[in-house]
Length: 322
Ligand SMILES: [Zn+2]
Ligand SMILES: [Zn+2]
Image 1: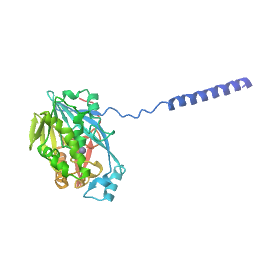
Image 2: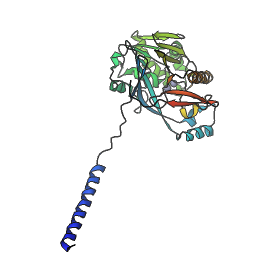
Image 3: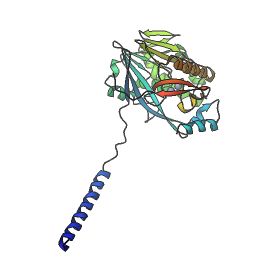
Image 4: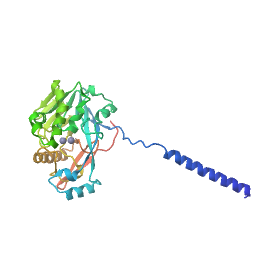
């Protein structure tokens, strides 16, 4: 090899090296995007199209919130599910297109809970629908993370919809005397319910539900009281396929499947809340039907299997819509 060839080779190598550095520099300079995929997920249920809608997440601290257990026990179960003390907890709603009616179950938090929630309306639009197309809104219960999305900037978000919720929830949460006698930390629950539901009551668009009610062909309300006095689950059926929307029958997957008796401080009456949870788990495991749950990781759709004294949650696989 001649000296000049050697110099040429060194020059080419140095140039290639600096080009490589340049290309790394360009790649590293791309800004990180830091947004998530649009929050909707679709499945077919017989003739019905079901779209799970993501409202966002809420940070919960199960060690502080769970009752009828110990912090040590909760810590162990969280660790087993690779969870830390603060659990990013989904808030999910479900949109059902029966072919003739568009029905939304729960509305997310709207503006009531801050910036990490309140995306349900945007995700409904991303999923190809408009809020004005919704015919009926079914509320599982009147906690702010389920009713807050009914209102935005002082306007009805679903101007053409009738809103349905349990009569006992309306009697409890919309009663001014209850707000007045509530503890300071509980007042917000009443205020959130009133701010979200009362405008629909005033517009003649609120219909309370009493007992088990068939709302339209294939969609039924079933009382499951305890978490709140008028908490309902909604049963959706088409062509022999069944989906039960649980609302807040449970909150912390890592703990409450294994130990259904564990309750949460948000329960208005925790004993019946635990009984309804156990009943719902047993029925879902036996019936092998699809379940949708407001606070299970998005899309919150899956099945329940009995195991030992507890249960196991089996989330749906990500699939094409057929
Ligand atoms: Zn709740
Ligand atoms: Zn909730």
